[in-house]
Length: 282
Image (tube, rainbow, N blue to C red; front, side, top):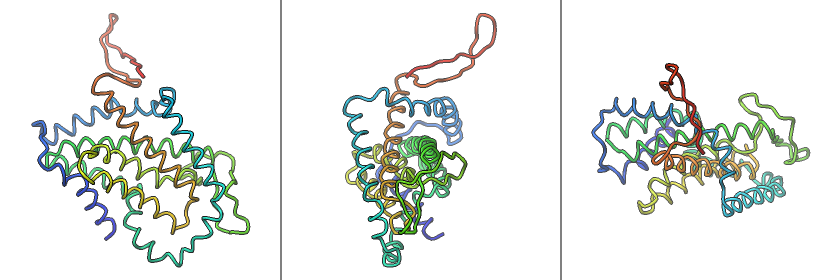
């Protein structure tokens, strides 16, 4: 409970400190909630399909980045086993305790409590940047879950802690049951990076704050090492996916400011009477 309280305080400080005087529109908290719920219904679900099709819009540099991620993940797989069994969790007990606060930041059970708290805090203190970035972080979190759980189920990579029989290249047949038993990619790392990337983008011009945010995401990912719950390649790929969903969420937010993207169903008055219009834009 103590660690969870510390995590909540850290998240609020990250979001609030640099922007207490941000100018906001004069909307009541209830108006904001209604407006945000409407926009979430209108955009969030239609955007999620775009996360899968966005590689079709990547330029050469983005494909090079994706190739580098795949290459580094593959290289880590070659040394996953010696890295994993070189870590003595007993000797790292003190380190594990120190990193435990950061570990809690990637726990999805905590996320679903902390994010609404941050959102409500933004309404109370009338902080538009915190409100907007928290909504976007929630959007990124949802997309990350879909991507990560899909890959976990499809790859179904195993983790055997018996050094004699452990094989980092052991994969079982696809299994999409929940909770997923696959370990590639790390859902913990992808979650914290999906959220922190959004906040780092929002506060990128606020001095050292974005570096502190990315540092927090890094420490949260590294906190998985003493627990021996993932191969190193799981953690790296999870972090990369989280970073990707965070950046893609920001891309969609910017697109929505100027035009509609995704697939949207909306009520419409047709020549024959009331109906529904289907709009697709990518």
